[in-house]
Length: 321
Figure 1 (cartoon, rainbow, N blue to C red):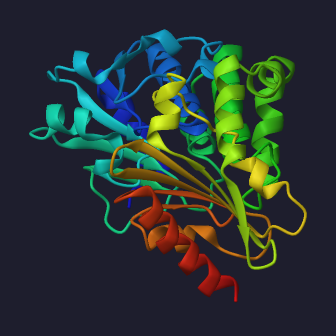
Figure 2: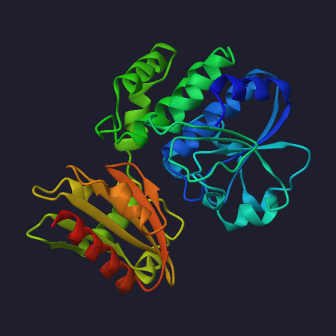
């Protein structure tokens, strides 16, 4: 594993980069990509950014989001590839992997535990609440002057991966970095309005579908919602990223573990895990080739929605019993 100083040195020594985030991107992924993008641009670097999917609409207020291009436009050249917030190569999605399979990953920056580093240079810090924390420290090590637009991006990265600073991955260091970002110009009111007080009609419709399929087990200690493919397709929400919907399970009195099962395509299920007690849902997610944090994790499984749901709920029951 490399030090953050070594990563900073490599970024100083190199001029052309491609930044890639994970498929089905969340706030930490988007905010970290954009924060690093603007930091490198400030050092007169040539930078491009790519994702397998679209940038969720709630992040369209962040400066530079439109510079994140779809995988179809990715034609690697002489640039050095940087993976952001990706626990492994596969996290970037098949569309990206097909285009970079013959190219090595130059730098890997992440805060998820990794079985094996996969890049030429790796900086992974599981004690960081978000990859956005790491990018802040990296830009500081590079002596980049952090502008308000960079601060906005990194603040959002940290805000979203800590569940508004309410998850137990929030540390004193997290709060100190957030405070510094506010001092540097991060607009917390704009973040609040755009991320938590502006719901699209599509999001409300999708929430209605999820709540229609809510169920409980173990005397209400487990709650889960389901989003079948056909129902999501019926409201044209297949490409919508429902980041906050799963949190409704965790708000219910008595619930220790909340789950969201979303059929992203026939035979493929994305699973969201949330915990508000001592249950480590990241450990459960790992059993289904996923991962994350103690109170928030995710996984992707092939199989019928009903079968995947049954397998996951059985394991959760075993853990909490």
